[in-house]
Image (cartoon, rainbow, N blue to C red; front, top):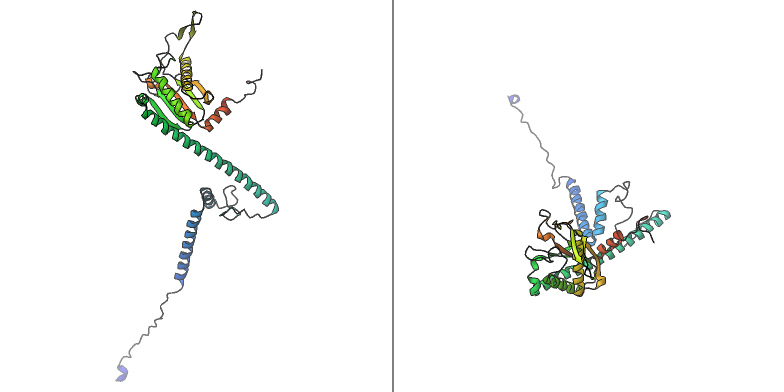
Length: 310
């Protein structure tokens, strides 16, 4: 009955041996190494480049197409040490060389102007410190330090001497300086003259209070009493000139004064309260060279048909 017995079923499983799982990991590892190398190369380039070069690299990545124009891809290698662009032809060589020379001239001029601007800013910052020291040391000036506002502005170092209700800088409705105002201006003049030769701008300001009928009386040398129209325009101009005379008497060279202006109440210190005493003030600006140049360019410009030789 051996035929009635079931034959055993044998299943053979073939297992492939070996410690490797294919070559895909090698590709991934190679990509990782390449990326790390590119990353460290980028760090190295950033470390040795200046701000202008980094800006160029940034523009190249933001706008890689050479068809877009300025700011697009360059045909040259990155300049790491003054290397020149690689031309693709004789005509292009001359054109690119001309462009390089123009750019180098512009960069040189910008650097020179920047250096002069930085030097001038340092001088004005130092003058600001000296003025603060002078105010603190002087018993007379220290009493008025809350009426002296000092700050460096885009035009230069500005010194504002403002009125207070019970401590005005001028006699009411007059350009006559108070004795302490004269001392303040003379001390300021000494400090400015000692530390800089920059031109000075003096501006007179008033509040909106006007004169009764807008008329004043004055006496001539012969004793004749005359009347004339008078407003905040005349008053602010007269006060600016009175400040100029006090500064010159304090030691400021006459030729260092570049401009004297009266603006009446057109530029208020306190715009919310046009009658506030702080609006009555003298503003002295130690002008930087850029401001002096702008004044010369715009205020001294000859207008055809208007400024004619006579």
